[in-house]
Structures are given as C-alpha cells and as structure tokens.
Amino acid sequence: MRVQIVDPSAQTPPFDRSLAAALARAGADVELLTAPFVHGEVADPAGYRVAESFYPRSSRLASGSTARRMLGLAEHVPGMLRARRAAEAADVVHYQWLTLPALDAALLPRSPIKVWTAHGFLRASESAGPGSLEGSRRALERMDAIVALSEFGAARLREAGLAQERVEVIPHGAFDYLTGLPAQPLPPELEGARGPVILLFGLLRPYKGADVLLRAFAELGESAELWIAGRPLGFDTAELHGLAAKAPGRVRFVERFISDSEIPAIMRRADIVTLPYRDAEQSGVLYTALAFGKPIVASNVGGFGEVAAVGGKGTETIRLVSPGDSDALAAALRALLDDEAAREKLGRAAADAAAGPYSWDTVADRTLALYRRLSP
Image (cartoon, rainbow, N blue to C red; front, side, top):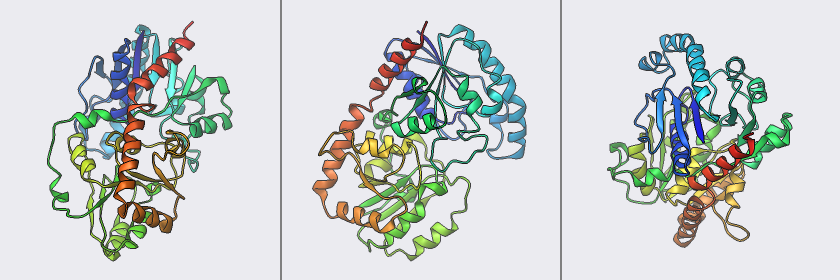
C-alpha cells in the first residue's frame, strides 16, 4: 500500500516520523510530505522517504517575522497544489495538519482515500477561529475518515456533526525513538540538581497551567527542585517568574526550544513529570514521559483519563488531579516525593503502556486496518 503522510508546516515531526517508520515496518510504501523543520534536528527517515515540498524559501527566514509569514502565504497554495499532484501516486493520503483548513478544503485531491488525524483543535475551550474544529469543518467533510487520538476527541467530532462511522479512534504512540538516542549531558542550565526534580516540559502555553504548578510547588517547601523547560508561545512569562521567586524550592527555567538530543538526559533526571493542563485532548509530552517510564501527574482533562485507565482495574498508569486545583496537585506531588515505591510502580505502569497499547507498531497496525477498510 502506498501511503503519503502530509504535514505542510512540520507541526509535529516526532509524530509524523514515528508513524511513517512504523507503517514502513508494517510493509507500507511511505512518503512524508512536509517542510524543513527549522527549530532543531529531526529523526532520520527509517524505511520511508521525505519530500520537503512546502515553504522552501520562507522556512529560511526568521521564525515569527513578518517577511516569513508573508512569503509563507505566497508559497502555501503552490505547495498544496504540488501535494495534490503527488497524491496521484498514492493509495492513501493521511493529513496530519492543514495550515489553512478553510482554504485547503478546496485544494485537496479528489482521490485517493483521504484521512486526517485531528491534532490540536479538539480542546474543550477551543474557539471558532480558522484553526478550530468549526473553522476546519469544510476540510473535515472532504475526508473519508478522521482519526481522533482519544475517545474524548471522537466524542467532540461526533458532537460537531460528523457521522460516527467516519471517526476512528487510534491513540497517540509513545516516543520511544528518543530513548535510543546517544547519551548527552544535561543542558548547562540544569546541571547540579541534588534532590528530586519535578519537570514541566514542552512548549509553554497558557492552557498548560505552569502557574498552577508553581502555586502547587510553593506548598512543597524545599523538598524538590522544579524545572520548566520549553519555548514560550504566545504569552509573557513574567508572571511565572514572579511566582517562582516566591517559592521556597529552587525553580529553573529553560525558555527555548529543547532539541531531541537534549530530551533523554532531562527526562532521565526527572523524578516526576507533570502535565497540569487546564485543557487538552492529548499531548506529545505525555507520550514522551511514558516512553521513559516516568511517574506522571496530570490534570484529568481530555483523553488523559483514558491513559490513566489503560492498565485496567486496579492499575494506575498516571496520577490524575482536577484541572486548575493547585492544592490537589501539591498533595499528589508531595505523596509521590514521599513514596519512592509509588513512584517506581507508576513508572513501571508507564513503561508497560508505552510498550503495549501505545507502541507505534500497535498504532501502525490499527492505522493500516483503517486504510484497508476504506479501500474499494
């Protein structure tokens, strides 16, 4: 089966490349159509091909600049038309993202089979803007199937009016490729921690609840160190620094893009990974922490509860707290800091989930089954 995976803006290279590699291992002929990723290295192609056919010139300009945005808009339609022509050689085109979904709906190929994984616009609080569920409706209606990464996401799609038979739940995979990267030292900003480390990792956005975590951390005294590592996106972190200054324990910020090569050392040094999100559907950070077998404390939002329950009755894969509740978060963190055996048990459950239902080979098998069901 010939499969094209399309991510025009290179929004999620770890997901795109993990899925492509797993589909190739399962016997598919896979090509990834994307743009150059300008923030750091990406995984080398493993059994699949890559064509960086989107935004060839604008991707060379400074991130966030007006010149880059304007040139990117000029390059967008030609890139989508090139992808439409390339689709003639495929049996399935699997879109991971569409940059301008309302416009892109008119630029999609009529054939072959079209699938879209619904990343990024299924949070309960999402507005009706162009990148939202409502703003994506025209493009969604052009798809033969839409993949949701959780039952929560599937319910959101069905509530929006998509027919139940067009929505398929296939979970996110654990980013185990990171665990095999060559060992690197910790970034200089994080060297020298002596006690337990609590980690908030990934792009910093208001909905991810870093302020909730800092208020919770202030209740822990000096029992641990907190690391907040990731590039801020769309907000000023001055409030976070103000909260950190009031905490008795040490808080360290790494406010930049964290490359793949830096992730293993950071994850392995962390004793607890936190996702104190106010809202979410799923999160690549969660599936990174699962791959490293880390104890995880997360808000009970979106599909996180499905991950918590994946081990079955009596098995806790991640520890859940109510979103926005800093007292509950502090209590959960304190309980794990005080109980090494509980941390080890949660870590084993996370590793088991990563190797089982959230392995990329399992994801690829389910994805290929969907493709075959859609095939004439």
